Length: 601
Image (cartoon, rainbow, N blue to C red; front, side):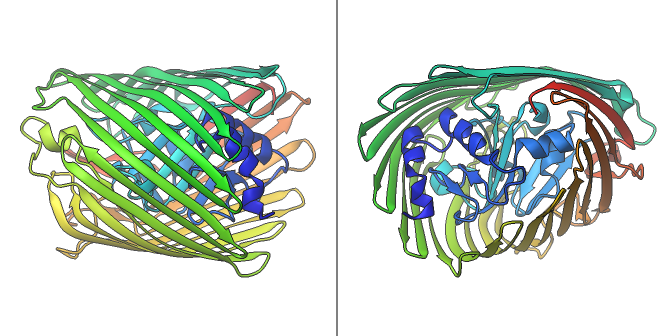
């Protein structure tokens, strides 16, 4: 049986790549090897496949990577990954944007356990409020995924999973602190009772922060967060589960502070109808609530998205068909008088995965009907071919679109009700090699965007983004290394200028050495310069950053670790600039953190 379709019993059992059971099964599989060169992924298709089988460009950061690197913020994990640029307005919970393959920050979808989370007013995901300490796994899929996920998947999709891996009962607690009066406590329990799985995690962080501009005051960040999940499997292969996350707290910035509350809740039921047909229903809700205190006065922006999704999976031989429908409603409650405060979106989608010997095919299509801007159709076709047991090639073409946000259309004194949705077409060619201890991947892409929505907001008639991504990994004895290099040219074709806040070059290298019960590691991240505005009249310099880490397993369950971040104390601009008054936002300087952990590793 073909490798991909040897996984079909697993896929049929869970029905949906983003379901609770899939995430848990994926984590159980990836722990087989200490350093898995070819892990399973569930975000790039609506099924289960390995990275080498995927016809998309994919990066996986698993629980082992997250524990070793011990990142402070979600952006620390993403920055410098293939095709990814990150900008922020300072360290510790400040406004953060993720640009995938040169597309806008609203064009990367964030999923948490299959639930999409974003602000319906601003359109962007709350990256700065999602603690990586509660994530067990992250998948980054680059390229258009509008045919699978609908609006805004122009650049790609990032999915985080919160469910701990493994079948055994596990308990863990972690405490740490360090520079900027930072204190952190996290912990969790998980296990299985018969056919019922459960997990519960909590996290608390408090820091005085650092100054965001030269001569400014320190701006702090406080975060309380937790996740839970419960799922139950039945003898006939059916399953039902519920999952949730809440992250709340306070962040201080230059002109005030924000109390934030981010919540998700999802219920999923799946059952086989006949041997080759599984159906599933998922109901979810995601909230993004912010109360602001600014010099100009108080304000609040509360948004909620409610989604119902029905999927059907049919498998026959080396072919798999998934078809379904989706209905979503976005509601806005704000201190600002929006002309419209609610809109709905209906969608129907289908995907076919087929294999013919060494060749594989993926066809997908989706139709969306949005109450605000009408109908949009997206589609994709991808072809793959195994050149040998260790070399493969892939080629794809896909379309996507980004819907104008409530702010884009209706924000008083700012919105533009005449905005059109931006649409895109992307062609990609890739080559990959997978050996027992080495892998490399090369991807070349071109994305053409019509009616690109700018920050003003208005429509840029044409934009083009050309790029190449190089990534690789090596595992020799106790030494492991992964690296990524990206070159891209995000251009406004109407003016010839570079698109704002996009860098042309980035590099990331993560290296770890683990002799016996010790661990030593380093990460180097660098990005080239960028322009803060579309006019390209103010350049923001590039930066390079080196982080070091060391750890020791005192016993099987007790470990100690130390992280030194920004070793050379470079207080570089964090790739963004304020306008009134004009100043560059600064990152934190050198920082040292110590952590003690007891429990499952």
